[in-house]
Image (cartoon, rainbow, N blue to C red; front, side, top):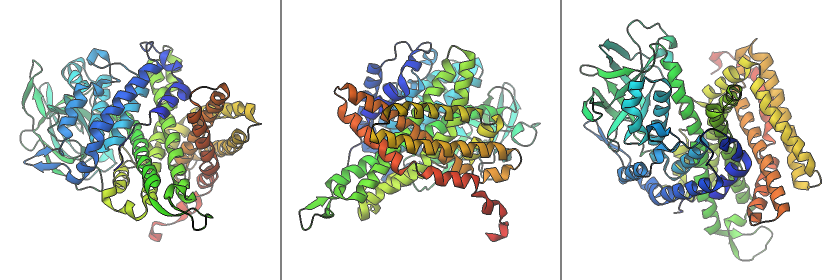
Length: 598
């Protein structure tokens, strides 16, 4: 079985050259961020991913987590790996030094998140949700809650969860029925929550649940939801662990994938009520939870990148070693490895080019987040926040949807052996399948994109992003004598026009007929992702050509990047025309049919 290797060269290229470190270095507190630091973090995180997490992935999938007497025991090796994770300080990488973090930018934390998810997604889900809980408490919690919980969460000694949905609610959080009854300086929580990732385990000393519930006088719908911190163990005045709270895991789900990650059904208040502490104000819980949810959506998009990268690595290694058939047109010559066959090369290039495009879009989005949080100018912060908000559903929806295609293609490269579990190829497809569902399905992300992000502001931020793309087209004009870059420019221009036409149609249509506009919401999301990926790779091609012209030791990498960018332009960007047609004209049958048709 192949061993995961962090794609260090591409990660460093995207951060240092494509997205660029300069805007990050200019932010307050980031003056010492440099390429050497990025390289050292990638190297050390890569060692942990390769040496500690990757060996757990396949056996963890076979063994799974076990529930007995409300206690979940992780798969063999997970607890030891979690301790190493804590000891290495990896959980606090991008968190405030005030709470024990290292204060590094999110774009660097995203690199490590990709490595954790590539090597063992089931493990990575635990610290990912902890990071989201930190964001929610840090931004909305009282000083007292911060003092009690943040240091332990940042150190990963305690883990965090997100408890939103219930059996009757699904994604409709207006249907949440969990109750929160006031009781002195706290509340008592009663209700059942489902799909709680790492809701119970023995790796951390405590588990801090973020729970949505309704107070007695709360209005119906989403306006009546409040957010509470409900620890597994209560915390004593001196910060030590106290008695067990009235919250327990009553079952764990049997799932298609991520078997080593326990997905729990959590019961709150079977006895006297689980003690919980209000975050912020009553009835503003959903607003607060979106802080955690939007962070998680970005992280889930990175999961899509990560699992796709791992699937590509395994498929490429298999293709190099699998001897089968002879080269087409080579007569009766020697049998060759399947990587010599054109269709296998097509599949591998399809996988690789999309992974590199997805990684670049995700990291560009993280760069916008860093500037939205820390830029010295308020107007600039607001602008970067708008760009981050626009691209978050794209990263989440597009990267996860493509991960299904890419990991499925990884199985196909293996042929019949891909369908056999022992090769490991099928696990990536099974694990990836949850990612377009996590933190809101692709349809929910797409509705958010066309409604809250495009139509509500009449396309202002979307057109700004398209303006950035048109600047890249202008930059490509300087290379019109280079056949590869000239072709990339032509294909990219067609795709940008398709995106702009689609955005204009949505802006014009949504206010008058949101149902019709929504029929093309997922194609618009995929179009955004496809064209944004083309934008990043077009910029990569310019950097690569400039680097080759300048000479130096990076020539092989730059030549490979040019080839990847060209393949994407030739084979992926043409999909933009089909997606545009689905946006502006594909709605007619969708909205015309009566439900009896189905």
